[in-house]
Length: 270
Image (cartoon, rainbow, N blue to C red; front, side):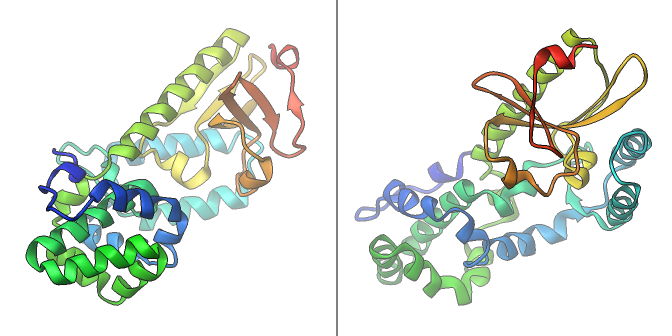
């Protein structure tokens, strides 16, 4: 599919890239205060289905493994029950679609909003140019003027297929995340751990339990792991119920999620 920022010829007097760079720094404000999460959810809802049986089978195998870890059983049961209501977008082969992450990705959402103004301008240059200038002058105020009719505008100017084509940043960061997990898996295996579970894009264990990897030691101890590409404050990850947080950059480092202490490599050898 074509990249959405290239899908419409840019009219004279409208700089779509400039508009995008004005909107993108608003980050999470776009999803929450502007309500773009709800707008995108509304458009993807008719295309959502329960997870295919193959995904469910893997999920229940993952649950059995999680029950052998230190993760609280009441949390496991609660999240397992939540899974019964999960509805996501899958393609005809049952593969998870990247559009599922569009409702919280501020970069791809900003690109869509910039494209919206271009399409508005193409139909009505006066209205489109006014919205364009107002957003450039004050991005928040300009966008908030569109908020009351944002759902109507998106349904008028975009199709579901347009949304599916607007996931370039999501794909890029997902690929980086997969590479980070692969690096950690190889490193853990080198230290002597067995990989009991690993997820991937659209994995239900990852989505509901924040767990990318579960490892097993030779004496059958299990540890849950969340992998992050670059270091960040552990307080930002307080919501996770895993044993270890593993950062890949600048070098692989492992932190005990409960104590916040870094675990040295020699203490990880099994």
